[in-house]
Image 1: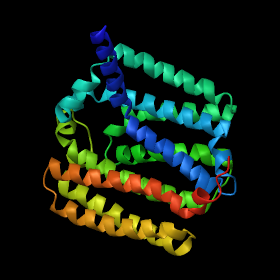
Image 2 (image 1 turned 135 degrees about the vertical axis):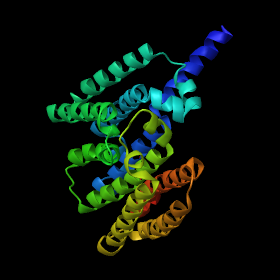
Image 3 (image 1 turned 90 degrees about the vertical axis):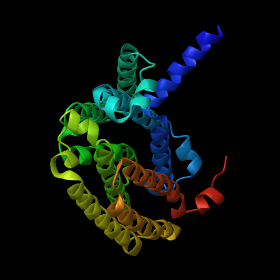
Image 4 (image 1 turned 120 degrees about the vertical axis):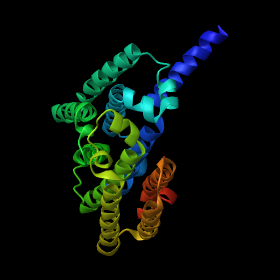
Length: 301
């Protein structure tokens, strides 16, 4: 009995590893904070949190992204055996057959749940599921296009809630572009980290085709553009106390730029990638700074 329970727990943890629960949690948090503080800032936060349609959109997002991670895990097996053998051991506790049925179940659930919203919602999530699969199967092997597509797919869930609230605020698009650039930088760094596996399996990534120096140059250009976007946000939008984040993030990215110039091996690139993860996490939490009074004064049950 004890061993059966332990085996079941290990399988659950393995599946959580495959679908990257921390990443999904951050996306859900970002969707709700964006809804409360940008897209439906005029509404009571409690009404937003208890909005059934928004909840379904979030569930569909979770299902689509989780299934995407499963597809990615399937196609990346050989590469992970070279780049991340320890994680692969954990992921393989769950059989490929189980992962396949979880993948099918998640996608069916997404389509079923989205049908309660509208046909357009079904079309949106079906398209999203397809492009995640197509990215994992084909696009991710293409130089730069693969990196940019991954970043674009990561911000796509925000367009789902944008379409729902029909609040086409320019701020959300500039925010989205800022996040897109940060994610693109992170994807290029991941290509540098995974270069051994990509080279062995003949993936046509930027580092494989053009080398480390050129990849660093592209990342440096993206960092420069990102700092420019931060400047635009600070001077052309009413961000209130969120200005603090964008000023700080510009300094932070310049710090990363100098770290990147000195980076020489996988350990250095991993460190920089972790710094970017921290920036993304703080960026999500800092959405609250757009209107702290919503948290302090306006929540009523």
